[in-house]
Image (cartoon, rainbow, N blue to C red; front, top):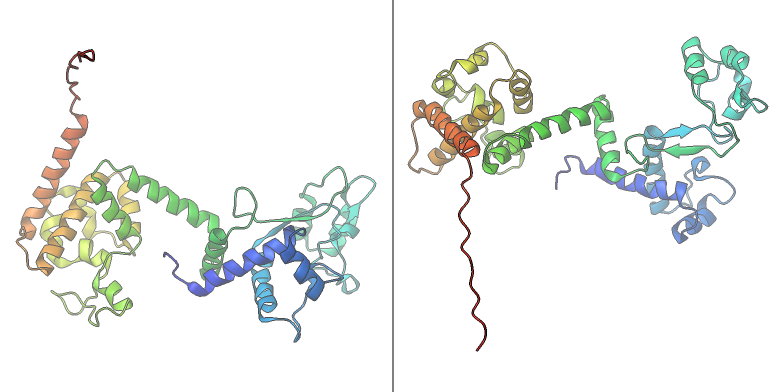
Length: 334
């Protein structure tokens, strides 16, 4: 289904319920939980208790996801607590004490006295509404600012490894667009996309899914057969990639994954379409060998891939001849 971490996906689903309790206060779901668990205050101030149900404790766990990833839009400042005060007496203070209600601007003197210089500058750069309104929480990872399980899951995964969600999303989307824009057959594009997603049945992936127990490459037992090794770095492929000087960087650069290799090929304009045809020919020949079918020798694959590339290119550029339309004569009913 595409979920690499079911625990994070479960947390993203729970966060969806917490988001509903934050924003939909007219539905029955909100009214039931409000009456039982946070009657006199907001869900943001609700705490876990021994009397709470398993469902309530789970929703509070999802609320932590919202609090980590969501942002506040400052209105009157009465719902937003000050997280990093330098004054002990302001531990429970809210943002409204930093706003001059008469001018609807920040109290610059107070902000400078309470916060570190860098924090103070960031606070004073936040624009305030001219008229007083309620504070609102929004989800910055969606265009409509509403929480979704998809972006919640991605936020948890990227937060786990310490990268920014937006940056990785942009890079991934850019690579997918380049793949689907390749002028080659759909089966070739699909194979390249699967290789970038590390979803090809290489031996490493089959071991990970407990289908086989041996992940070393058939030719060299000391190496593990992952996707990149199977179609690019294996020594048996020296004759394939060495037949064309355009792939001379193979012995000069190292890549951590197939997606990194493809991105480099596209960015440096090393004929990504011919690259895709060559990858497909290598993978196809590998499967024929594995199933003991008639197959082409490795030293013929480079030329074969180039011929298929030129044939497809000629078909794409060939003029379309229109067939003359024959005139249809209708016979009147008897």
